[in-house]
Length: 263
Image (cartoon, helix red, strand yellow):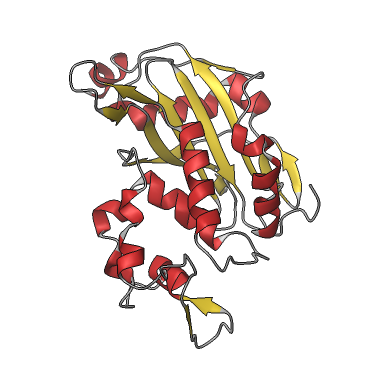
């Protein structure tokens, strides 16, 4: 049975799209925010093409093929001890989780206003915390399951790639300087989402829908997890965003740590 299943799995080959640029990595205002949030120099994106038809149910096989492809191995980088390096050992297996990606607007964040997490002015409501002197209800909603704020965004929406992206940006890196207002987080989330995710319009209904499949990935070598980082940290992550029609895959990567202080 295993042999029969294997023969139906396509062999994916990848080529780097070296001329592809991402607006959120070029924009100076966004770079300044990344510096403030301790993400600058630690967050990256790359683009690759692939040669076979992609189906979401084959996501694990696709991810394993990606991390074993010669072109990917020659071009993919990870941060280790402050330097960008290649994967230096053979990937023996991968962890691949399909992340729901269905949102075409920012409506899912409306409850943070009606709940009082965000004031009508857009300012984030501050609160006391046992260990952190400068804390707020937004970070409480994002991190603390036992808090009243956690359920403001329902579980289905919390699994969405749009929410994951917002959470990653809001929590930032090791020396993150947090915002007093929500707009920089929302605007940057929207910009990155538009850059990474592909949509299409139904010719009959005119409705817009997402066509990309998002896969959160980790790669393991003989010693354990080697990518995105050997250190387990929620803010170290890598997503493969697959456009099945263009046959493009974008890598969105971050390794938690101290970001650059200059652009």
